[in-house]
Length: 427
Ligand code: AMP
Image (spheres, rainbow, N blue to C red):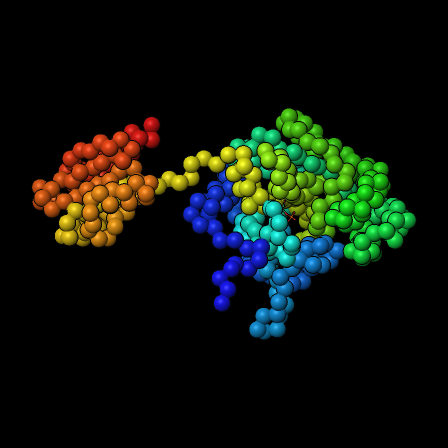
């Protein structure tokens, strides 16, 4: 039997898990600042939810989904992204009717894509994301981008590269796709087999083909900005003016089309440079979409959102030393000296835990020296030592492990003393 994790998946233990949680928590804090509520959706959906949501022409649907038949012979898929499932949940629960609009939700959890594992690209990865539904405006789009930027600022990022583009409304895209088709049809013989398919399903996808030669061809393709309707152009400039008014640096990248079919109007990505030059790809990507809720049988309502790849953010934060000390350790390690004392130490530990102190005890009586070493290893602020003679007198020793200072204290005063000492240490 192999004990190797499935290719492209990872185990996260202790500090690594804390880092992943920290990034999600900071994003959640930013989302709460902007008035978002959490929506938790299942890890799997019926396959057609993603086929229709992410779109038949996306690489995700064509090649990357973990799809299987369940024992009832239904085709289900592990979510490759959240937006489609979130829209399905909004329609299933009629949240568009019961909630005040815009309805602003955040989500987090694992997503699964059968991709070639490499730096910043896994088969199971963690996403945090937001969606704001029911207010179709450049201001809502702008606010969503600001939320992403604020979350990265909370994490300590200083130099972000924000790429932004518009895909225009349906009319703009229809005309643009026509122009793309005409352009690519002159080069199609030199392009990869995938692009042959993309040409028929959605020529926009040819702009983010990964094949180098195809990328060269795509560079000279027509640009969306020449096909925008007046309304789409105005809307885009309004969103940009919101970013300008907040002094946000961004780059309009007219090659940015994003890999999912549902986007319309503004799309954006956030990148950051690693010091060693590692390219983790986009940390975050998102944009505005029009048809999703309607496609799932709900009303004609648009939305805007983004998703962050938590592992990529963690890797960059490690390189840039942006993490605070996440290994908090414990407040006190309770050391029993003498067989009789193990039980008493356990009682004391339990009562301190009830009071909210992070405490541990070895659950056996050992040698003082080796248990003190354990206390240091557990990163305890204090060791509390209870021996038989002292216990009989109602006292214990409290030892500051950073200073090697020790004092005797009444057991009944321990809670208050520990409280005071920890507050002092915090300062
Ligand atoms: P997407 O849903 O493709 O827009 O992706 C949103 C974000 O999720 C990206 O910007 C990445 O940070 C992250 N992401 C996407 N695919 C992967 C992957 N295979 N491994 C790790 N992170 C990913």
